[in-house]
Image (tube, rainbow, N blue to C red):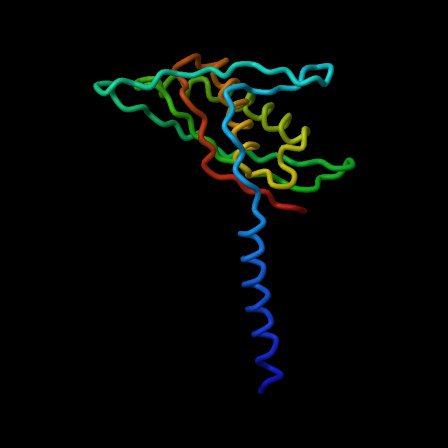
Length: 168
């Protein structure tokens, strides 16, 4: 009887120790910054001010949300081989009455967003703790910048609804 119960007890203790170690060793949250650091073509880091959109007044209608019709699926390539696939769902926070503009521009938006996602992947953005706040903020900022190229200041935010990395 003890021989059958011992592996279960060890597994429960190991699971508890793993959860405890994960909580104790998680990285501290990154401080918020007001500048965006981007790599220049020569590899230097260049600091650029962030764009802020004023919050709507108390009498303004609520913002509208546009769910992009399909998920983004793209590979992570390491050493010439597909190492993983990333699946991502995005939504857009738009000014009231501007959702039709987003749907009309969706093919261009999807193309631009996919370029940003692939650049992020090629820069190692989906390696390690890719879901950390700092990494995700950089990705959201790049997606917002690309989205504003198509939609202008009527686009307030790009929301990452789902993200999944499946190693092959």
